[in-house]
Image (cartoon, rainbow, N blue to C red):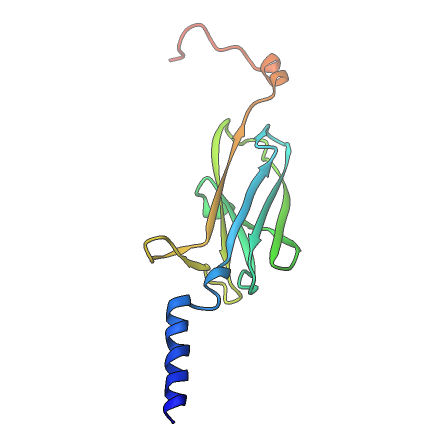
Length: 154
């Protein structure tokens, strides 16, 4: 009886000291990219995320451009396993303004809820990553652009 109690206590202490068995296997973004990172309107871009996910927690990856949830879309899972790969090719709209944009990647579980992970302070945070992209006007468009008027219009 005494040996059983000692064994149980040793296992409990070992579990407390080493932590949860999955603690070292929390999902994380290994890469979140847009290629190319500099694009013109009507160009095509490949958006890719690589996620380390030992336990298959991530079921969906959603991408949102410039904080606009109306323009969010899902990536397609193209590789399964401990490191899953999610990707999608997209066309840049012809009317997108020139400038710098932040693209946010968010991971969701099979229930459709955002995957939460603990940060350094112990707080739960959404599993997210960001990438930057830049929209530039092609030089040939400058030649065809109308000239600005000399005086302001009334």
